Image (tube, rainbow, N blue to C red; front, side):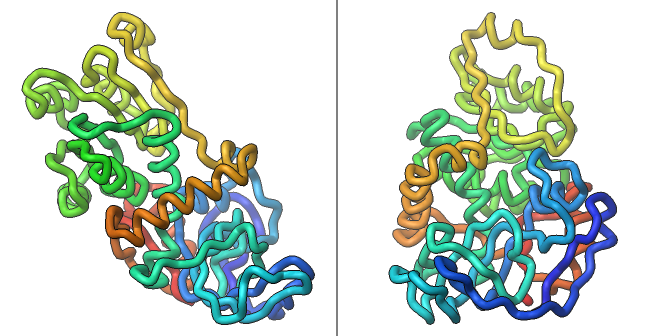
Length: 322
């Protein structure tokens, strides 16, 4: 089998594609012939040794893969050889073969090709968890999404729109803003613009109902100031750095700040998470959600892709095709 291998946490340029023995599934697992694997910011952080949950080298990065089951371990009865599945694993996906457990697998809707199936779960799972479990977005509300040109932001646009919300996108480049508009955002603001003032203009002075903050950094305080009285600020990540926010902006306007750590919640609530993921898959199957097609890259681009993700040059989603 061919796989990307990380031998040392830190410099992403040290990633290599290597030939490894093809594994056989042990009891209670299945083997998947990988057709596509997702590449995420979290994957790149792990390789760089900057993620809160470290993987011990040598290991193969990648937490999402789509493909076909080609072998079953002893005791597996609810999955069959030939099933098209999405595998949600913490590592191992950037390869042409993957071993997974049945509870890590979801059947792929017929409407999804392998590349889109391999790149929707982390970003859509986060958005669905944030906007249905941590807070509830309602029809007619306005949601401001920062980092809107990346995979996490684009998924949030799609999910918020599916609930009948209006979406304002904030992104750093014209290319990213155009992509956000094509994904369903109603308006787009440059991240170096006056986000508070532009948001007020776009809401007739009323302010934003929900901020979905992917980036943090300098935009965070402006986004918080853009909220209306009683607005909700949803903390997703800090790709532009962890912000320092004056909490009087929360107190004086009766605002709510909500943290979203879907991965940690999944570990504590694995069965409830199965329900959540199936809600997302059902919404995709019914056409209420429409994951964008990712940019397809070969496994040999792994180091370059990690660099693009870490420096925020990546646009949209990226899938490796072995």
